[in-house]
Image (cartoon, rainbow, N blue to C red; front, side, top):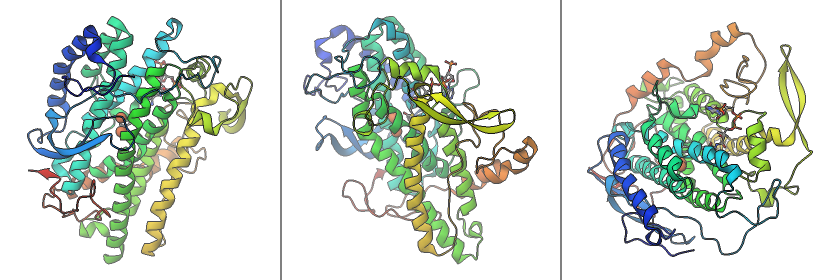
Amino acid sequence: MSSVDRTGKIPNNVDLAGDKRLQRALEHWLPLYMEWWNDMGPAGFQTKDIYLRTAVSVEAGGWANFDYVKMPEYRWGIFLTPNDSVSSIGFGDHYGKPTWQEIPGEYRGNLRRIIVTQADTEPASVEQQRFLGTIAPSLYDMRNLFQINVEEGRHLWAMVYLLFRFFGKDGRDEAEELLSRRSGDEDKPRILNAFNEACDHWLSFFCFTHFTDRDGKFQLASLAESGFEPLARTCDFMLTEEAHHLFVGETGLDRIIKRSAELTRETDGDPMRAGGIPLDMIQRAINYWFTYSLDLFGGEISSNAANFFGEGLKGRFKEKSRYEDHVMKDGIKVVPQVISGRLVEDEVPYRNAINEVLRDEYIDDCQRALRKWNRTLEKSGLGIQLSLPSRRFHRHQGIYADHPFDPEGNLITKEALEANTSRWLLNNADNDYLVSIMNQVIEPGKMANWIAAPSRGINGQDLEFEYVRL
Ligand code: BYC
Ligand code: FE
Ligand code: FE
């Protein structure tokens, strides 16, 4: 593993200087990326100094440097977690054999597809969040938004490096396509559904970073197990940045919930009178983003996923420590299915149900965060609790997508679903209201009225710190 080179146009620890063709190819892509960033990145703040962290090393303790940076001058680099020893493939049909440093020819198609799908989500999220800076509830939050945006940009670099390094002309074509699709575009949408949904205000932003970035955590962790070592080490390093995105989402929602509970009490149950966010609206936002994020795990029964596992390309979450049998050739998993209009428990070959195994882990993690929010609510004494809807509710992918379910997961009629949709899911009136109460707050240390202050600042700085110089 080579050391970190910070002198070139593209900071990296993959010895770009030692591979001139690759270096030139990536340097050629850089202005295309900048064009995309200037067109589709955060609107209105490109010339401002933002207090940002930049990945500068891969050492666990000191990988990040904090300083004021203008976003277009951010140093998007390529960093892989170092490999200090020879590794072996941790699961699937090649279990125990040495990991691959180059792409095995027969898996080229599947690896390309996985890498492109992962890559596509990164710029998509930046596009979705493009206008949120203009309605940020504080400088602290505005800074966190931009931090996430530049790091999603770096995640795109991480994947594009793999495309250029290992996929030749196909990889270069894919890298261009990644800059030409657009979130929500009718003709050239992003690949996965959640990344085409509008994220027009900060309740959706916090739900997105909590629920949708959390899909990123679980997908990246599964890819960090990959037998294709460059992919594994790239994803492993991306996870260090991901933790902050999840922190922003989880604590952002907690702060909204805390403030909403206060305003609900102060207004005898009508927080909208005080410009606050009603708790039932928060529940609808949770229902909406949690279920779109469940779709991101793919179908409950998937031969793609079975192949990815068998081929050693994509493992399970914490494959080594959480599982004993790493081959799972004959296991089964019970998956409830709709058969003749009724929900019936069905046995599915384990590998075919592996998307569902990862979704289980994800749901557990979401439940953990929910319990924390509910403790915040308990302290308010309102007697209201939030919940996660069933994994069958409001799905657009997989075996439940074509059937109407209520948030408890019961099969209902289409009419009953239609009659209740606006009660169960974030709706146009909610979105209009949420946009209407969100005005930019730029006095250092001040918060918009609809959200509580965070418990501390960033990198040991005070809350009053000038996180963005406007
Ligand atoms: N929307 O066999 P199936 C992140 C397609 S987030 C639209 O069930 P599979 C981030 C599927 O492509 C992490 N289409 O699915 C977060 C297939 O299409 P074809 C992103 C979907 O392959 C926030 C068909 O339906 N990383 O990093 O087992 C901010 C049948 O699919 C969807 C990854 O996703 C959907 N939701 O699993 C920034 C990791 N779901 O072949 C960043 C890489 C499925 O019929 N991706 N389809 O045309 C994968 O591992 C897999 O592709 C999936 C799907 C888990 C996504
Ligand atoms: Fe990312
Ligand atoms: Fe993220």
